[in-house]
Length: 195
Image (cartoon, rainbow, N blue to C red; front, side, top):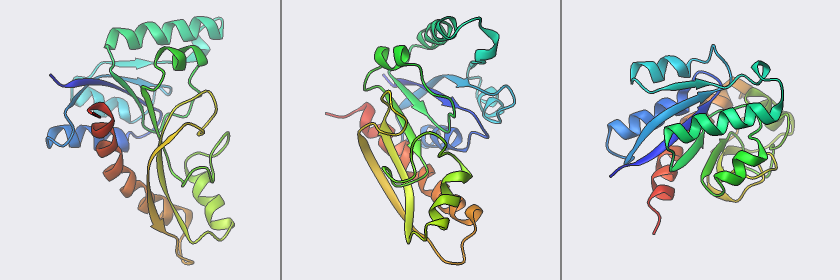
């Protein structure tokens, strides 16, 4: 019986697509039972629709309080029946109550070699701009467990890439993203079926 994963995304969903591709290729023994997005225009929604994966748009502005928003998120994700939550470019902070409920069952991917260039404000292209501005010779991606602090959970895996003096932030982002697409499905599989 394949394990169930719920993916959270905010953007185009390229890591989400890498997960779907790994499932189709038989490299990841899992089924995606739901997609949670923070942005109603996220490209990930179209990717989910093409696979008939249910989508929940979690827009906190629609709730009178954070408590109600969190309860609604918990209810919708519990309906999806997740063995594992996978944050694939999700740009909102996960509520503490949700983290407690899914303790050690939420994985995140981050586009730097944590603990460098992690935390509040470090996401997307901003990470790569900072790496280049500081003259780093290597960067990469990190997969970690989610805790109450941004990007501070236990690290499960990292993949390094060289940084070249000719790199633009976009060049570096593309190289790191390629590694993310290879690493994330592998680590999800290992984590789901760890002995």
